[in-house]
Image (cartoon, rainbow, N blue to C red; front, side, top):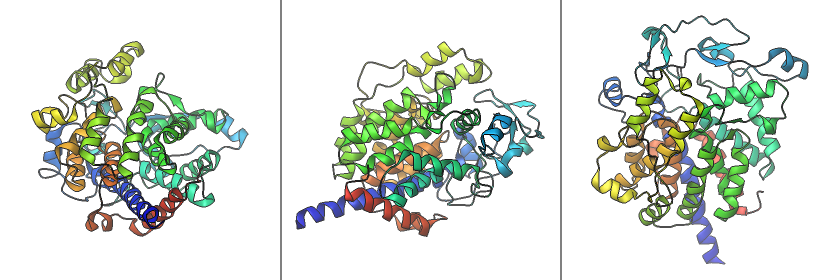
Amino acid sequence: MDHDKDALGKQGKRIRNALWGLFIGDALSMPAHWFYSLSNIRKTFDGGIRGYIPPPHPHAESFMVGMDYNPDVETAKRLGRKVDILHEHVRFYRTSYSKHEIDTPEREGEHGHSVARLADRFHYHHGLQAGENTLGAHLVRVLMRSVISTGRYDPDRFLEGFIEHLTTPGTNRDPYTEIYLRRWFENYSRGLPPESCAEHQRRAWSIGAHGGIIRPLVLSLLVESSYQGLGLAIEHQNLTHRSENVASGLAILVPLLKALVQGADPAPTVGSHAKVIRAPLVTGEQLFAAYRDHNGPDNIPKDEMWRLHTRLGVHPFDVERLAQKHSEKEVIRTVFANACYPEHGLPLLLYLAVNHEFDLEESLLANANAGGDNVHRGMILGMILGAASDHIPAHLVQGLVATQQLRTEIDAFTDITLQGNAI
């Protein structure tokens, strides 16, 4: 009995550390989110990010201004559904219910998107403080609170909290509202049932992004086995992201996270799980070149876009060999894109962990300075590194804006996972 209690105590510590790692990885990366150019990161952040800092203005590469959100306002009103998810941030978007006031007359160099003039290129997380979490991390908290409130996972309870969080003015300080959220609420505005509002990556490619992995990966902690955890994760994924690429990422990450939480040695465990991955045939540089050639990914034909993101190699991904043979300068963007896609981001984040010998702070700072979708990669990487760690640096915990609230929620969620009856 004492042995069982000791094992549960160690497992509980690893779960807590995984959750702390998620929120730390998010906040550290936030200032350099969507800086695709590594030289721009070094220039903007005086050589690179070294701790929690606020987002800068302007963001040289930002194309948030002019993103679209077009709910069916009249139908939503008739159904009694709230669909304003932008609130005070609406000025950055083109919508079906507001006047857009910021022009986008220029073109950004990495993806070829239309962008505002430099003075109007607002950071995706404009207005957040150093150590503050993004909307993606706050939606993890919405999930955790839905579990804490009843002692178990209830998808309907989560969806209620999800809708309330996004439609309540003053709740969300983060301007960046991802495409999956905008498409979800567009479908919701037309009368679809909440459990059927998720968009599919075959219609909007960016649905197949790292952001779809995070909440399902957290949820998988509620059950003992990776077999059941993967089923639970994919069921939750489909509430907001209908994506083959996201599901493939979860198939690797759920059993990996479970093994680390249960005390497995990180180096051989990550190495063996990585061998299930098949790396993309299209390199990072080739992918960005295709985007630029088409003046943005939205102009790429759907069948070509599908091939760009689903053509994978046949050989197992040897992350240890990659770390031994190639520097980060040779890997980031060149081999694997630093964009939002799991077929690139999953092997990249595992490479960063191995290359920094699973040191949580060093690995998360390397991820922050790798740019692109570093925020969502950082949340996943933070969970993996936290689950592999017996200790989280105190200054990283204390530097988070919501440390006390997070501690309460993390402890309560962990207690529920250890009880073993949360689904």
